[in-house]
Length: 437
Image (cartoon, rainbow, N blue to C red; front, side, top):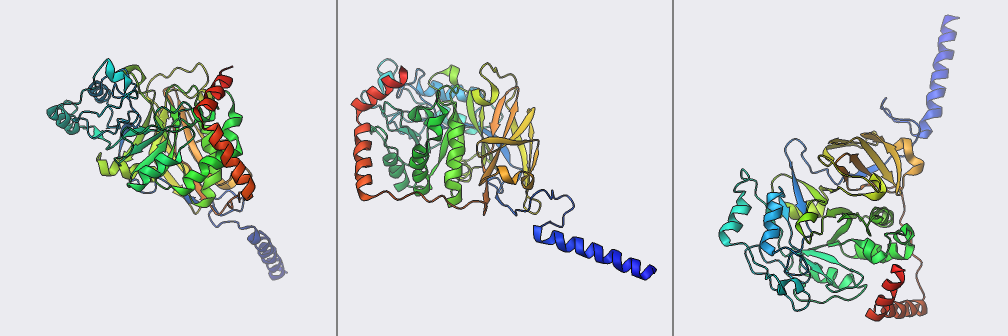
């Protein structure tokens, strides 16, 4: 009787196990059994050695009297150095930065601020001091080569920042034409970032424009075509007309990640005066502060977008106080489908998928939120000092690319005609007047 009872018990256990096996229950005791997907997580920070690598504060979007800024070229550089920046790109409109100790080559009409205040470069001696970190305990500030804001004089602010390629000096831009500058920089081996898309989208007061499938397709095609176009500014200035740029970012991520392409999020002050410095910045994580490492970090996405203003996330009347949140380590465990973010100066960590907050806390178990997750998740750290956005963690194998419907030849012809009409200055003037009403 005893042997028979034992056999019956063993049979029950075996039956239970056999019933569970088809549902993909993992062996780990820590695994949440609410889901059965096996996510493959692509971690943009996988190369980071969190115990050794350091954080470097960067601004990749800066103006001076070489274009339309109110501060002289050398004074703007000095102000960033004084405020503790480690990386700086001078990106005047249609004026390629050839070095902080070289006279900016001003452009008629575009460089109108230079008429009242001739931009002056640093002396060779001072340039060497800043790069060496004199007065800052050897903590030098890196000069990002060939910074420039392209598509100058575009009324809809169809702006693209170029880096690491001598392209765009004196070039006037065209309305709605992002591809020409992106392709021009790409051909010379440089990198680009699309600036403050909310201005072009007109989405400051209408999140629907940020979600418009036509707009997502338009930009998505650019990112799929040009790997050198790294991403978009997701936070810039004081987050007025650009408040829904994170909404746009999430839509872009859903569009392009299934094609194997990520879109990095950047944050910059777009400083035209001293007061604007620091309202948004990038937190680079690198082994050492060198030009080569800056480029690698931009390409790999080992940086965080930080902002003191984020109206949708922090509220309309939020006033930053103290240090902005920062990430101190990230751990990705593919075996348990978990991502853990550790940080400092934050009060809450939120996890975003498909543009919605799906979880809070330092660790997310993807299997617990399978029905809410598409092809990515990203984290954002909120605190008294502002907000910090991680790059998106791509989740391969969870989504298939959405196939865009192929337009007929006649439709393409018509769309091209309409695009040319809407890209004329006269049309744009009427469009902007209509938006202002």
